[in-house]
Length: 294
Image 1 (tube, one colour):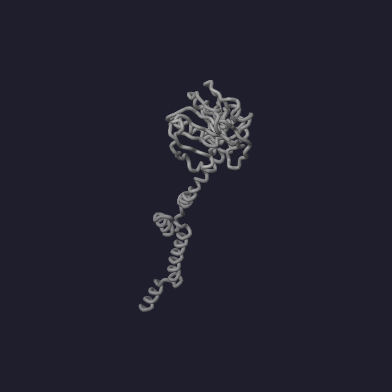
Image 2 (cartoon, rainbow, N blue to C red):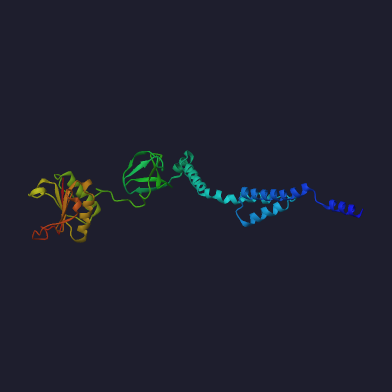
């Protein structure tokens, strides 16, 4: 009888076979779930891994809402790379506002400042690269400006319309106008060429201190009325010579001589060239700038 009781007690304490098998399977399933969750969530730090492991170890505890929101919060850093594009969009919006019809009308109505145009410039319908050219404005003109600048162009008002010109050519100072007014009372004979008249007018306006010009003589180009001697010496002579050379196209200049050097249109690529000694200061053109025109 004792032996039978002993067998029944031993059999009673034996764990059911299903429980023995289910235990390892549950552990395996839990580990798999943790692994799958880790791979799917792609935690970006050790703290995230620890949080995931803790959550799997306590199945009865639900994951707080703040924990589930942590992953998107970290992905915001990647999205922030688009901030430059957002800034560009903002700039584009600003330009669109600037060029709107209402803004343009207001700018024209409120414009009250006038500046000089320092160089001949193209007129554009707007400041963008797709703008249409609608004419030119000559150097020396004074124009109404709105004060608006965009994409390297300044807005001016021409005949009541908005026009845009390249930035950097509006000035408070009246620019020199080639062939401006001669205020020192000098003149050249009416029989000289139109180009000689232009040379005299331009030099007189730019250098009013020069009061002597030689034109007609009995020889060569002077006799034909296509040459003029500008009586000047020293540093001022160099300034005059460079001034005439710079504006040779507008003045119809063929060549000029000063200080025993010559510059000509035909050989302009060589610059100023030395000349042989002719024996005197006047013959070597040290006391005047000789200009021959077409």
